[in-house]
Amino acid sequence: MDNILRGKNIIVGISGGIAAYKTPQLVRLLKKCSANVRIALTDGGTHFVSELALATVSEERVYRSIFPPADTTGTDYTRHISLGEWADALVIAPATANTLAKLSAGLCDDMLSALFITLRPGKPVLIFPAMDGQMFLSPSVQRNIATLAAQGCIVISPESGELASGQCGTGRMPEPESILSSLEEALHCTAQDSAFYGKSVVVTAGPTREKIDGVRFISNYSSGKMGFAIARAAAQRGALVTLITGPVHLATPPGVTRLDVESAVEMHGVAQSFFKSCAIFIGAAAVSDYRPVAAIEGKMKKEMPEIELTLVKNPDILAEFGIQKAPGQLAVGFALETQTGLDNARKKLKAKNLDLIAFNFFDRKSSGFEVDTNIITLIESDGGTTELPQLTKYAAAGRVLDAIEKLFVQQAGINP
Ligand code: PMT
Image (cartoon, rainbow, N blue to C red; front, side, top):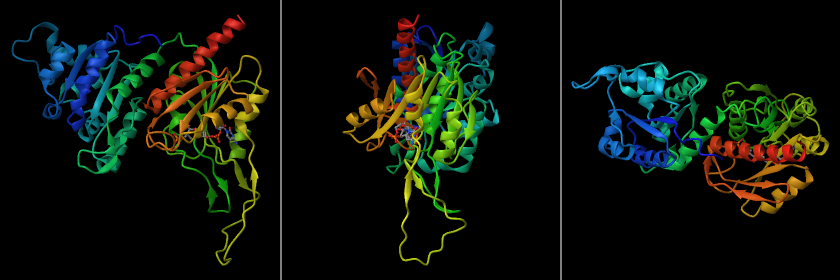
């Protein structure tokens, strides 16, 4: 990927959480990519990272208050507006519970919250909440996150691991490298010259539920996050995205057409109707391979000491598309495997006639089901592999899409 950050105007908003100590490193990385960086630091943030350190690495004064200092002249009186106009993107990392509440309510009593509402429409805002695990799960924080996501902000959930309290939970801010990749993706996505522009893309996401009876089902731990991240990133690159999803608790990414299904058979039925018309089919869903031969009517009684469940194979949606795709159509899959699963992933790529498969680990804690990060190895049909570092699912989605763009370019070379 070209250096999309070169010459871009980036505002880094820093609020008062322990993860703020990592932000000089983020600013350094941005500067290395030749981005122009301005910093908005909240009062809380000053307890965790010094203004001097941030000013030194950014080579700019740090903005805190909307009220200008006494020696202010000219446009400095309205800096909260000019900064909002200047920015190509705003990254808020870490975003504390307090800052999320202020942003979602539209309060603006410091530079960060004020410039947030003066930012130009369409400019990406990436928010990285980071806090104690219980705080993160609290209804008010979740409500504020949902409000900001509905406004179009890209809210990237924190990672799990050891927290400042010494307890383990979900609340850690991603590493600066991962934040940088997410920002690159957000900026890349706004480019109209993407090979995805105007293309019809179908993405499957989430788990499927296979009914045993009226109240029970067979399913898996897929949260839909990977598929939703792919759908969001593809839509931002200008694709016409249809997202076919099993039952998940995620908001629909902006600009994406969402079709909800429950079982593999339903997902298959809906997906089939796009087989002829779509340019790219991306299977990120964890489709149940088997379903009970017939669901029992009502609620199964518990008197029997044991029961036998006969399962039948579900249709393989991606394989069906892969095998019947026309020249010019691309089929992309995911393979959730153990550490030693690279060969299995290769076999799936071949058996399903895919152009690309993303092999991700299910036995590493920052990869696979439910978490917000993934560790992917991309395998192309010619056998070429690319190992990606641990990235947020959003950034990983961008790398998968970059690989697909490369395939388009190769294809265009073959069929000019
Ligand atoms: O949803 P998350 O919590 O974010 O987790 C993401 C994920 C781990 C589910 C995702 O990254 C992933 O790996 N999805 C594929 C899971 C898998 O291993 O699928 P599979 O090996 O059973 O199938 C391989 C490919 O065929 C997949 O692209 C799958 O969508 C597709 N498939 C499989 C079976 C089937 N009946 N129909 C299909 O389309």
